[in-house]
Figure 1 (cartoon, rainbow, N blue to C red):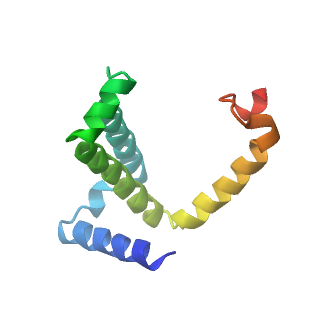
Figure 2: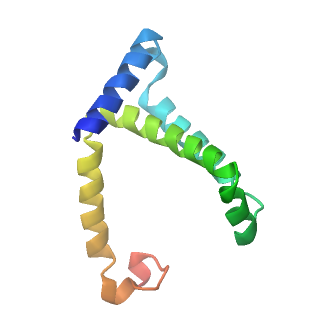
Length: 117
């Protein structure tokens, strides 16, 4: 695990411990929180076409989007910590798996799922 990620997780664990929130952070509840925060991120883009999104992100919208992404990442980091998952290691493994599932020669320029290529 990177030094910076370890420091962030340590801060999150201290923050949680000081507030006695471990009791609320069951894996199910953390997973629900990830989905809820992802929905809040999605809401930032809802009903906007590409031009409206571009203007929104050029203004104060980018700050709100950053905060929603950070909320998602925080819950993912806490859940990963609690389950003993090395997040960066798992991300690397998933990238390798996706490279095998989506070879460039079959998937370049296509949005099809791997089993439809």
